[in-house]
Image (cartoon, rainbow, N blue to C red):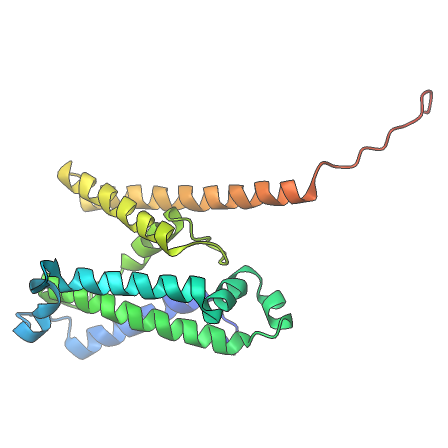
Length: 221
């Protein structure tokens, strides 16, 4: 849909999420599933060298992503695509292949993250998960990832995730309700996007430089 029909990516994501959630409700009759097999709960209940398996998975993903972004051609092309799609196309990058492969990777990592979430709670239903995408988006933007693409780093992203997690834990400890937490996260997202746009505007202004001022001769009308 994004590469061929050219639907805006965020709209495609929200639309397909709604479709699949509806399919999930129909297939499960909105039932809640609990008590998963122990083999599945290994993801969050077993430790290796004193470290939980889900933490190890997160570390592996972070390390691999850092290597791909900083050391591999694919990472450079991905950042170029996010920064300037038309420039990337003119540079010879296969735009369609890059987009499809990046969405496949996102889907795979989302599936892995979902398995960890279900294993940790040991319960799930068709309403489990929606809303998490905005938390992830907020964490990414707080971590310096540009909403328009082309900017960001893995260490900064990890810092953004930790920052948002600390804020969430702080609100829970303070006894704030779920609705209040949604309001705070929404305000953080708006502030982060606004700050990102402000930085881009300031950068464009610096690149343009001061406006040319034409000096008129003395006495000119």
